[in-house]
Amino acid sequence: MVGKEIGVSSWHLVDQTRINVYADVIEDHQFIHVDPERAKSETAFGTTVAHGFLTMSLMSHHVLRGDAGHRRHHDGRQLRLRQAALHLAGALGLARARPLSRWRKRSCASRRNCSRAPTSRVEIEGEEKPALVADWIGLIYFA
Image (cartoon, rainbow, N blue to C red):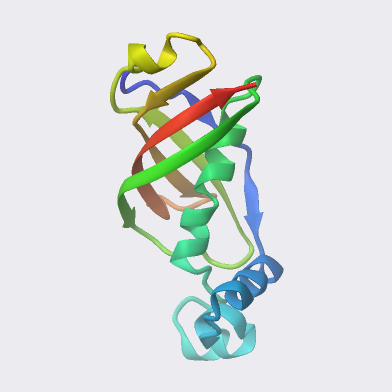
C-alpha cells in the first residue's frame, strides 16, 4: 500500500465567492485575491488567485472525499507543505493521496482509528504542476 494511490477526490470549484469569504475570515484583502478587474489588468494571470492557505485549508475536504465508502473524521498535522503553482479563481482542483508509511499497528488494533502519513497533491484541471503538495500525519476515526 505504501506509495500506491489510496484515493482521488472529485473536482472542487474554487470560485471568487469562496476566495472572498476566505479573505474576510483571514483579513487578507489584497487585490490579487479579491479584485477581479484589477487582477486582470495588473497581473499576468488575468484573474484573481486563491490564497495559498485556502488551497491548503481545503486539503482535509479533498482527502476525506477521496476515500469513497469510508465515513470518518480526520485530525491532521501537516509536516511539510510546498505551494508549486497558483490556484486561479474559477479553476477546479482535486486531491490525490498516497501513504508514505505503513499503518501503525498499535493505533489500528481496534480498527476504529489509525495513524498514517500520506502525501497529498492538489491538482488543478488542465495544469501540469500541482497547486500544492503536502506531507502530513493524520489520525483517522472510522464511523
